[in-house]
Length: 409
Image (cartoon, rainbow, N blue to C red; front, side):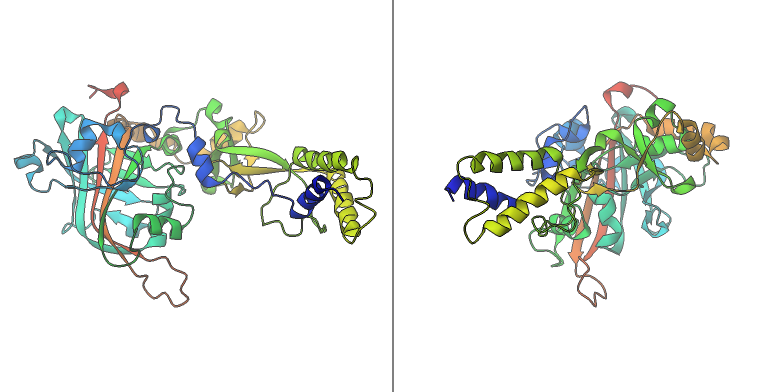
C-alpha cells in the first residue's frame, strides 16, 4: 500500500471527530456587538490600584477597561467614608440576591446590611456588603460561570413596594469555566483551597431577558428564541447562542466506536473522508484486498458508506459553552402567542409596578461584581467530589449609567 493510501485509510480508523465547538474557542470568537464585556484591556492580569484610587473609582473613570474577569488589587469598599469623606451620598439599605436561593440573599440581617451610595451626581452607584458567610462553591459557580438562569438582583428597601429593582447577569463566554471545579480553580488560583484571601472582579450586564419576564415579551423577540418547559419552568434560548448541525448516526460501527460522547460527524466531513480514500485507491487498487489490514480497511470503508446512507439528525450546540443543547423547540408564528401568554401569566397585574421599579435601575446597564473572599476546603466532602468553599468577607456591585441614559433621572 502506498503511504498516501495508508494515511487516508488510517484516518477512517482514527476518524477525527467533529466535536462541538470548544468553549474557549467559542469565547474567542464571540460577537462583541456592543457588549461592555468585550471591550477594553484589563484581562486576567492583576489590576494595580492607580494613584491610590479604589477599584470603584477606577471603574467609574473607565468602565470599559474592566472587560474581563480577573484578580484586582485595591480598596473594594468605601465603608463609612463613602458619604463623610468619599464624595458619595447614602441612598439607603438595599439587598443583593443571587439566584432563587433565599440563603444567598444579602441584606436581610441588620447586623450586616447592604448599603447603597450614589456618586458623581447620581451617575454611579456602589452597593456593598461586608460580613462573614461561607458557601459551597457549587452554590455560586452557576452565577460566576454565567450559566445560571437567574443570577443577580439588586433591590432597594425591601419594605417599599416601589423600591428600585435591577437584574444583572454575567456573560457565559467570559471564560470563567463550564463547571464548578473550573470556576473554583480559576477564582482560587494559584493555591486552590488554601485559605488565602482573594479579590476578584467580574463584569456585569443588564439582564434584558429577565426584565422581559417581569414586563412582557414582544412577539418579535420571542420569534428569535427556542423554548423548553412549560409554565413557570419555561426557559428561552436565543437563536444566536447556538449552532445547528446535522450529525450522522454512527451506532453499531467499528470505525466510529472510539468516538468521545457527543461527537458529531457531518455529511460533508464523511463525504470528504471517502473522497480522500477513493483518490488514493486510484493509485493503489489493492489497498482493500491485499495485506494484513485489508479486511479491516474494507470494513471501515463500507461502514462510512453505510453511515452516509442513514438519516442524519439535527444537533444543537451552545456557542458559549461548546456543549450540546437538548429539549429545545423553535418558537414559530403558530405558537408565539401561546408562548407569550405562558411566560406572562400571573404578571399582568404587576406589570406597571415592575416597570416603575425597573425604570429606576435600567439606566445602570453596566456593572462590576467585586468580591473579597478566601478559598477553603469543601465541608463534609466524604467522596472527594466537591470543589471547595467560598468564604465571603465583602461583596460589592458597582453600577454606572450607560451613555444612552447619561443625565437621565
